[in-house]
Every structure is written in C-alpha cells, then in structure tokens.
Image 1 (cartoon, rainbow, N blue to C red):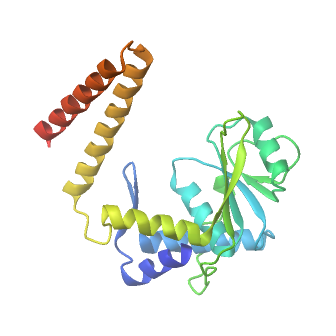
Image 2: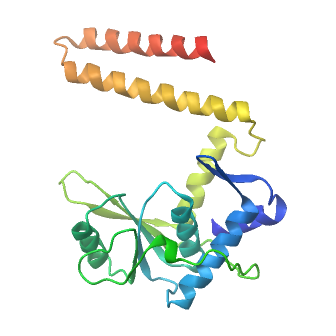
Image 3: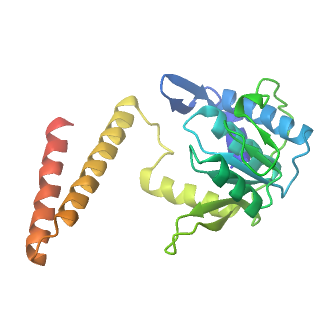
Length: 231
C-alpha cells in the first residue's frame, strides 16, 4: 500500500490524501513524511519482519508511522487508543515486539518512543517501499467470544484486496467533489442513527417478534425520510 501512495505522490501529488480536522495533507506531503519516518525506523534498527506495536490515534502521525512500517516490511500491530500501560506491555510481550510507539510508556521494559520523536522532516524520495506480498503486514487484536483478545494476521495482499473491494462499491477512482464528501458524511450520520435505533429497540425487548420487525422497519423509514428531506 505504501508503494501505491508513492505512485499517487508522483502522478497526482497535489491531490488531498487525508483531511483531519482543518489539516489537509496532499499525497506528495504524505509520502515525503512516510519516507522520512521509514528512514528513521531503519536508523534505529527496525527491520523487515520485526513486530512494532503502535497505539492507534486519530492523527496524521499515527498514519505516517503505520505506512512507514508497512513500507519497510515490519509487522504493524495497532493497539487501542488510551490502552492502559499494563495492557500495552502485555500486548508487546505477547507478540515479541521490538518497539512500542505511543504517548505513554508501556510496562514491562519494551523499547518505547513517543510519536513526536519520529523524524518526519527529512524525506528520502529514492527509497523504494516493499512490494506487495503474501507476508504478514499487520496483527489486529479482536475481542473474541471468550473475552480474551485474539491476534488476527493480515497480509499485504489482504489489505490491497480490501481496498479494491471498497473501491468497487464506493467508486473512489472518480473525482470526489466536496458535495459528495458532505453527502458521504451525512450517510455515515444516518447509518449511525439507524444503528442506535436498532439497539434501542433490541434493548426494549418487545414480546412479539412481528412487533419488533414493524418497529424496526418504521424506524428505518423515518430515518430515511429525514435524510432525503435534508439532502
């Protein structure tokens, strides 16, 4: 995926890659920071196949570190935002992590750096990210039915397949206008409202199944009408 970002940086570098709050980052800016972060990770000894735990945060630094690690072939292991230091240390130990990236130092003595320590200002545009392969790119911990987290391995090919399947449905290849972005945001809001309504109805525990279905159907209809009346 990092190689795809490099291709976009070359072919359409001025296009927006990420919009986080009021911050807009182009593909060219994004790849420059990724390549700089990759060189930093290599300089501190991170190699292909190494496991690196990164605390997921809704900011550009997290995204840059993730793609830099994927680009050098390290295995990126996201941890939940605001995970307690004790649990973060457990995860790092369980996956034999050589590094943890997060705002708080984990327990257990694993090597740790804060995100703002990663150098993102000295790009190496000649750097070639790792080619897409069947090797593991990420290990994602899920809750699991037993209540104990399970690690699920995702390959580089798996990530690309997910991107391609999303593109087939959402058609990201076409130019996305600001109006369409606003429309997608509105759809996300409506989907969230629908989920909330379904949870409310389930929790109310209607005695008769057909009553529950009627109520859910009416809830969807009300939300849909509200959406189309506004957009």
